[in-house]
Image (cartoon, rainbow, N blue to C red; front, side):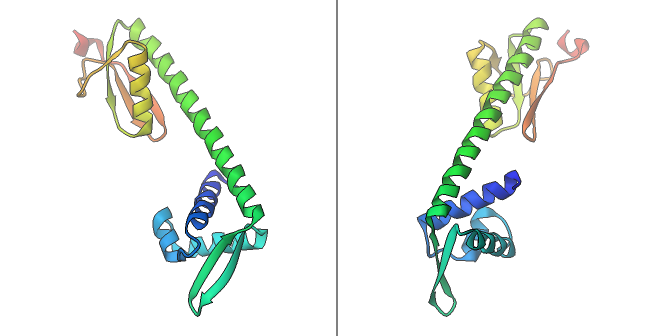
Length: 162
């Protein structure tokens, strides 16, 4: 199962556990995927024995997690947490390596371009290392650029730093 499939499966199982009366349309809206995709996931989960479906009214369904579904949700949650912690540790290590480069270049201040969880991890790692994070991008200082799920360090050219 791919990481995206696992994430969608985990989120669907969590949502069904919280609200067994949720519609496929509402699940699709919450996950940001097509209703047809939700239908595919649910059919797969029913076939695997994770979810039981009961008809309440002509067009109204209720979804219930089976014991296997609860176990799968727990497994997927543990896997997600493990992957998140691995990503966190990798981000911290990469940032520390970049900060060693920053210090070797003679800087004690940096800029961060980007936002989100990754930028927050970079920011906190900088503070922990005693590096000041400037509030705005300044080309005379090193810049951590947040690109998708990684960071890139851009040192200023010697002409800009002069």
